[in-house]
Length: 198
Image 1 (cartoon, helix red, strand yellow):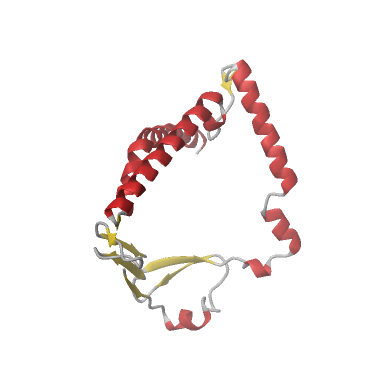
Image 2: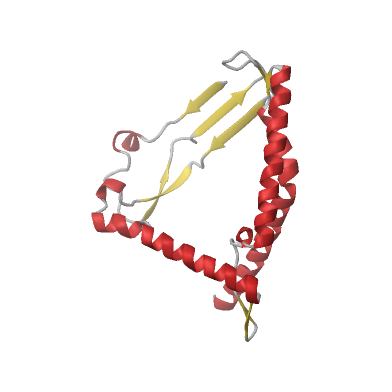
């Protein structure tokens, strides 16, 4: 694997991170050039001597015009601010209890609350009986195809991560399509709320 990195920042940012003259809030600053990282993986062998699969190339780049928002670092947080930034164990327990109560109530009584209102269960679908069974079955199928592909590659004395990924994607295609459709419905609903309120 070959790694090629190129990073060049303005002199004022190379020595001190963010210029001291920068005021609080959002600022724009031109960078002398893009920051880019390229990873190239060619065919060959791994460190264990096994043959590698197909060639992949990925590139990450950033715009020359960047916006910087100054904020506190973790070391600058007070103890109270740190505690306020994270959920505590008691809060996690309360969230779990409320979710469990909601799931039981919806499975027993349905989604409708009356007056054309419904419970919101977005993100909780896999906690209901049917969703849980479907998720467990998908996981079992994915595990089977991964183990099968790994064994096939072991016998062929090669390593092909993309073949493993492709096998997983065939099994998870239905779940991926369902998630995409749900996301589309959420987007439509969000757009309606935005138009009605702004």
